Image (cartoon, rainbow, N blue to C red; front, side, top):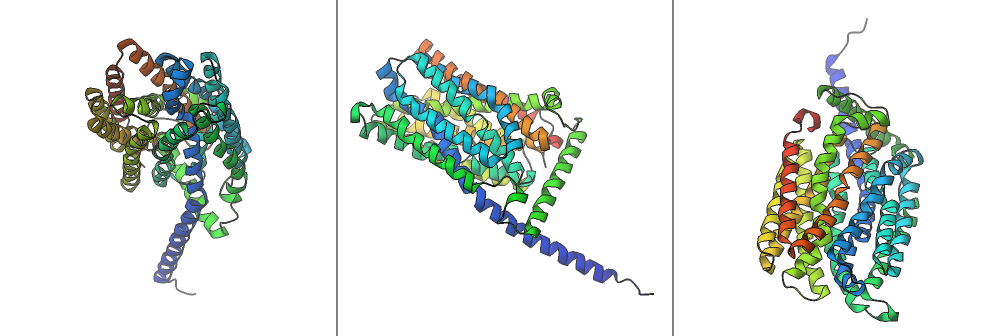
Length: 452
């Protein structure tokens, strides 16, 4: 009989572990460079087409005689269309595949965004914003779902933060670009500057939508640029993460969800909706009204307004990626959300008190942008910690669609309060209070449910 050799067995086990770690590092490097820069580019284009109406307002409102309330309602109607089609869109993507579905979304919204050049009345403005929301519904939650196909939860905050860097990047480059287009092309071929801006900025969505079909892959098994060992390690990590999600759900007193009905009836999902609603309220108030706030501080010229509007977004890029990395490294979620929410609240409150001081206003808006734009990517570490599989497809869409109703409420509320008071002070104080409520709701979320 041959005697067993425990030392040899341990050495072999250590060797396999070292090999798997090397394979894992190589695999995640490949995944990152294959999908993340492209997804970020897609989101820059998506967000620019979604919020460039805030810059168009500088000319459009005067040309078409739109009041602040008309503009706020039209800006917000995007999110009603978004809300109605978001859950079906994510479920269709889960069935059809991200490659084709994301391409369809981008091509459709590019066409509709270009059609804004023909808007002349408030009704036409409302209809086009609603249709744009229908077209884009599913893109953002679809990408969040797509990232769960590749990354386990402890790697996800950094990736979502990087993806959502597209928001400040869109503001940092898009605002000066929009200002330049509106100034340089105004009156050319009989079109106003805002018409040229809508048309030119819609073209990349159509082109990149076509490119998406050839760049993205629907999952680990369909990625030809991964070898078999890399696929094995990545799939193992996803399976282990899904088991951990089920264990976390059980530990938090929840249940495993395998149906859409179970998702809708789970109180944790609706708690997440409420938290996200608070954060999105601040996010879209900032992105839709930033040019107006900068102009109100005494800045003149569309290009100058665009350049100064870029500063808060640059600050947001730095903060959101630092905190995203910190949240994953420490596997702590709640305080990494509470702190930026309170930063956003403080920034709005200071900006409201110094609306006519350009230096203080830009500094305060930078603090607000760093806070509210950081909340969104870090937030998604909460629901994806206990959602997986079909529950993730539907749950992420439910949270995002209900939370994004704030995108309707926020600009409409700000516009109505501004018309009523002839000042931005009250709306900004209200935004500050809503962010404080969001921070409190995160604090009340059980740590054992989300810290993985």
